[in-house]
Amino acid sequence: MEITDKAANLAHEAFDKIASTTHQAAETLGETGEQLKHTEQQLINNCRGYVRDNPITSVLVTAAVSFALGRLSSRCRANRQTL
Image (cartoon, rainbow, N blue to C red; front, side, top):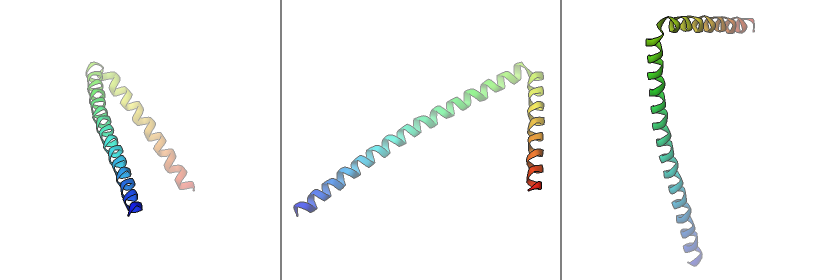
């Protein structure tokens, strides 16, 4: 019986440690998720402000990025066709 009790106690201690660690990890992830949401909202607000204050530059940057992505996409498709 003594060995069984010791094994049960060790199992309970291990379970308690795992539960505690899991709880701490969940809290940390929750806090990190909230921080990410807040940061995302700040970035969106900053982008909106920039676009509102610099509409021409914003359109030109968007056009340049679209052009670059189009070229990159074309090259990727061409490379896949040659394989």
